[in-house]
Length: 191
Image (tube, rainbow, N blue to C red; front, side, top):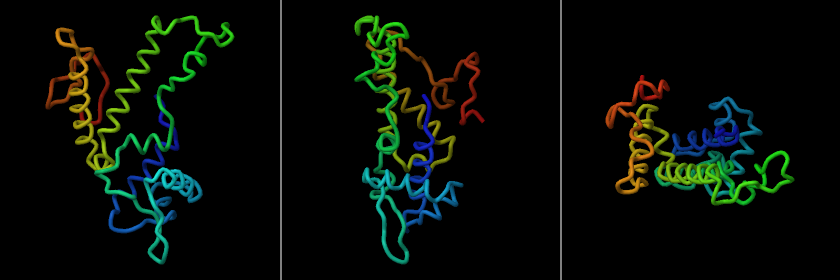
């Protein structure tokens, strides 16, 4: 999965507004705080305003502010406003049919395990992002990583069928279960 610049910087604009709930921020203030050009911030705020996530405030103390409290805004909603889904089902098979097939997939939907993989990951990702709120991102990185691991592990446990071994046995938080040393991938809360 690749996060687009629009998703990253749009989310950063949202976080600037969330960190200043008592007053509106100008485009110039947000641009300076994030090291972005004012026209780019204006474009991002326009997208977010069209989706009902931010509103403009007129007057001497005008600028932009969130339309709701940060603890009520789902992260998934913000990212859907700014980007596209990981898995776009309607023409997935045609787009990935093969270079020599003239757009006709050689796999039937019943045989395509990749389609099922991307569809399942998209569902998990959407559920995880919809459980997170903008206010969650105002926490320390270690607290956020721990919370994400706990929520994901609970989601995975809920998805496991009774009597079937879980697809993933542990996400390795210190508060849950230790991560196998052979993973070799450091995570933010490991430090």
